[in-house]
Image (tube, rainbow, N blue to C red; front, side, top):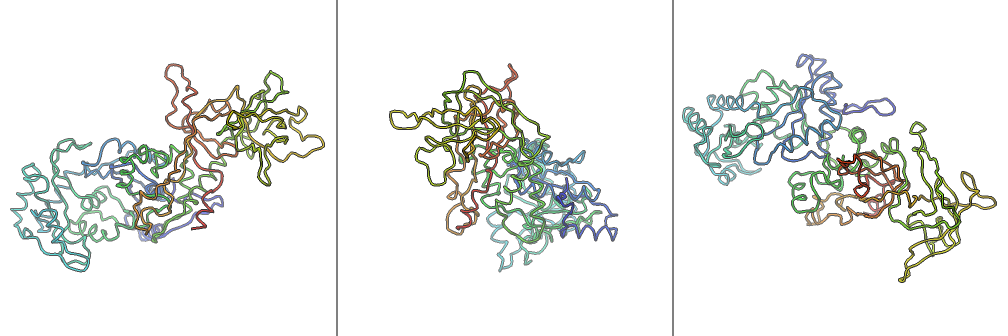
Length: 574
């Protein structure tokens, strides 16, 4: 799916990466081919920032009739596992991107990478170093001070080849030796100060290669050579790799690879009220602040999917924010606006009472009635549904006030409202418990108001309802922003990002009543609960294997987004 999805006007915005590719094609660079890649590390779930990169890389390949590879950078087996591999594949496919037969792992190239490393040694461009990690940091220098040569920098080619082979054979303990590129310890770019390109990791089972290797290449060495081996033409990454580009090119130039991809950097997606660091996301999970990688409050693609976000909305969001070289922070309202726009078009309407108050219509007969209501007020193709109506109903507590505030247009003692798609009712009696709490309303209905206005009076309020006899009882989870500060990990107030957790990010309502048609929903189905917001049936609500039906008590609906941006006023006051 294109990174620049056509807008409704039919236009497709350009960006600096497309300008580069257009120029390359005009000059017949790479024979006019365009081959990109998305190279995730399988050490966690993908987040919304990855979605931007996925749609960009796959979109460019699609638009230029090229290819996009999905390649797992699996060079750190301590933190990687097959769960993350499968989750990443699921996320990429969910976004509408198809890698076809172009699924690769960096581990596919371990033999070739080892040969490349030996070539560097033979060219006197790499050496085995015995410095400890702490000593290596001291020798590396600072941004203002040059580094110092390692005392092992001038080992002979023969000695380095022997030690490197013995490292591969598992003769040395972790951390005792590394292979380093020999570049320039005085370089103003610290990445060129003899970076480590191989380290020892013994006793680790790799999810693809098992126990075959105890020697693993570093990212900077692996990435550029994997790109070259796959024939990538444009290696697109985020701005934090800009200072790594000289190293990317150094490896390819020094090894004289037949393919030399061009690294191009763009600004990463920084979203308000969010953190996307995998370390911090992992900490949120391990400390119990969220329930897992797919918690609907998480910025992971799995979390967004479970919350009810749609691929189309994320594609539109990425189209709106564009591709630039400038770092910026995107307002959460932009993302939520894209979600609302998409769900408003594609979500059928339903009635749900989240905070129920019982209503008894005293003059209504014992027999039920059935009303017909549109599934979507702006789109007739959605059709209609049947809604049962009975003597006992539930309305929302917020739709009744015994002492109403000014301009209140809902139900009050002695007042009238219209029940959506049904009758006008009048509140005749308020029933309270021994503590004075309102527990029930006794009302009467006007039988002549079905589908028409009442004679001689104006009823302004319209409220939603469900039939008590037919309603489905459900749990509803009201999700909100995980952090109450727009930049929680850069708040400049001396506090940790954890100090900015929003205590109201999840509110669980265990006794809600929904209209019966929602009993046919499948996990992931999305609806607009009228006057309440957009909701999705949680992925945990699978059908019962014996009956084929989902137990009513297991219905859990997650709020995807409110009907309006409720944070807009809060943000304006900051």
